[in-house]
Amino acid sequence: MILETERLILRPWEETDAEECYKYAKDPRIGPVAGWPVHTSEDDSRQIIRNVLMVPETYAIVLKETGFPIGSIGLHHNDLAEKEDEAELGYWLGVDYWGQGLVPEAARELLRHAFEDLKLARIWCGYYDGNDKSKRVQEKLGFKYQWTTGDAPVPQMGETRKGHISLLTKDEWENLITLYTPSLEDLWFRQKMMEDMETMSYNQAWGGTIPFPKEEWRGWYDYWIIKHEGKRYYRYLKDNAEHFIGEIAYHYDSDRKLYLADIIVYAPYRKKGYGGMGLDLLCNAAKQNGVKLLYDNLAIDNPAITMFLKNGFMEEYRTHEIIMLKKEL
Image 1: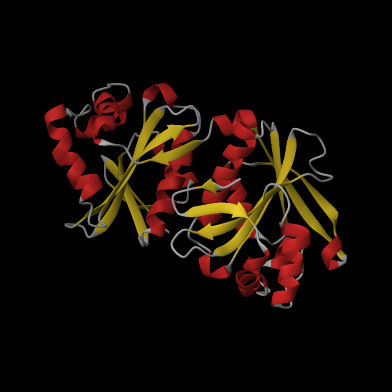
Image 2 (image 1 turned 180 degrees about the vertical axis):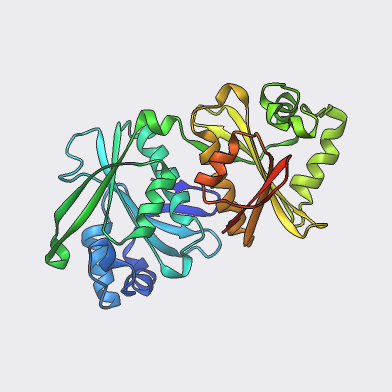
């Protein structure tokens, strides 16, 4: 089985991957925090590939740009996932590639495979105390905290640790969202949102609904999608039923010399948590594209202010009409 994402290929491990595996797995920042010792040699990595990684539903994370593996991800049956319709998600990534959103990207595709192709009902995931990077990955994927164990065994390290367990069910996964680059023909959805009074109620301070006639689509599409020049970013939000549910965007404001965020969730899909998930995806995309600070100015009575603050934005200033928020990425 080979799985694919925008930047990655997930494929079975091969013994010939030993050199690349050792390159990353010898780093003490990777294995020990996850509960396994550093690889001691290329031969050690080859033996681990043969005995541990070359099993069903364990995949090398391969960067399309280079064609080489940079980490591992897999679904496992163990004491935590005992039932046939359950599995535990595990992953690691080379340090050189941290902070680029690659593990969430790989995991989203593996979760799709787990729930759609393998017909699993529940996916477990855990991390040991202090592994905050793994914790954040699980939160981004929609996993929900279940319990903490004070003396979780770590057999490969010969010790016990405090372990934290989280869970994602198929029902919960079906309510998660992904990003989609719209085609020109897909702009009917943006037109529909812009003209919907309930959806655009947040925009009353700037005139409410916004006309978006079809004759303007081509110019808008070229500016935002084709010729974005690295200064503009636009994506649809899409649920797992393939429905468009909103949009996220940011652009560089040359007058104020800052990047401004924008997120709209179509009214029928509100109050499902999509706004917070979409904002998190937008912040991750901006960070990957080199944006250091992201701003948004909202009407002072916009209920989305709370969502921005929960996502880590902080108040920069306010007037009697608007509040300017800022987040360091």
